[in-house]
Length: 384
Ligand SMILES: Nc1ncnc2c1ncn2[C@@H]1O[C@H](COP(=O)(O)OP(=O)(O)O)[C@@H](O)[C@H]1O
Ligand SMILES: [Mg+2]
Image (cartoon, rainbow, N blue to C red; front, side):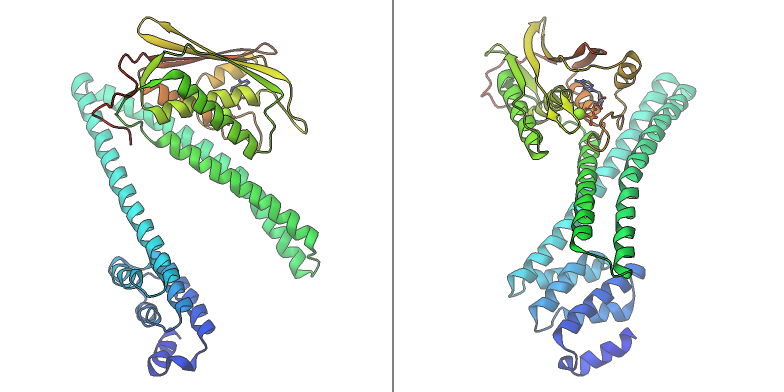
């Protein structure tokens, strides 16, 4: 079938209208997705990459990522120098995706090697049985993470699939009116946005904290976290003004940190404090959030406290386990906020503790190492 088309196009390209040639690229894509080395499909991709119509060449640019490596390299470098900017952009996007894939592969490989190495060192220090037990414990942890992630994703995909089925059914009955379509699309958009949030949180959780540390003013970190929380609440259609924020952080306190991660950790905790005042159908109700900090020995202690509904003892115990995916915020929370905060704080040899009482509010204490140098001083090792 594709072979006949190939012969036809090699003979006279114009014998097929250009929009059909563009649709043909999609068919080639489908064939290659099923069978990556289909020779006719690959030969056609080469022919169509030289098509006089830029729309056809752009379509080839869009299917580049599914081509085998050699074909990809040949066509991507050809299309990256195309005379048309849309075609060049499509090729650039494909090249960037490939680069990102390669970076990801080498990061994963070096992570696996590092972990295997750590296990060997552990075995040498504590013996084979202890190493096997350590591995078994890590695997159980891994099982919990995968199971809760699968549960979360299924919880998003099931209603998404149900909406698609409903729309399909209405379409086949010819009863698809604008109201049904826009309601279905709004639901799908909402679920996809949540899935994106979940994936981003998973990515943040799985990223290790870069080794570089710099001195930074604590009040600047708190202010940055605060504005991120405001932005986030606003993006979710929540008015933060009913909640009063009291910040009492001495101006001169410095911490020695990977700034981006510490801002993210404080942001996650502060966001929870605001969300403690969220009521369904009412948004945020009146309440207070207090942020204060002081110096204890060589450390800085940051306390973020709210007078919201708090947690029952049994829920608090679970939250104190910092296992990702545990959330009480149905369809809104991902349950990654505190686990991410904990990982980031622990990477600084810090600590994070949560105290809470049902109807008595929640208090989170973060301990970080004090920074003593000039905040403008550049450390040799830098954050990435
Ligand atoms: N300030 C708080 N007040 C009440 N409950 C809280 C507070 N902070 C955290 N929690 C509980 O801990 C859970 C996990 O929080 P987190 O990891 O940030 O995930 P998420 O906010 O996405 O649910 C929340 O769902 C909530 O049940
Ligand atoms: Mg949260």
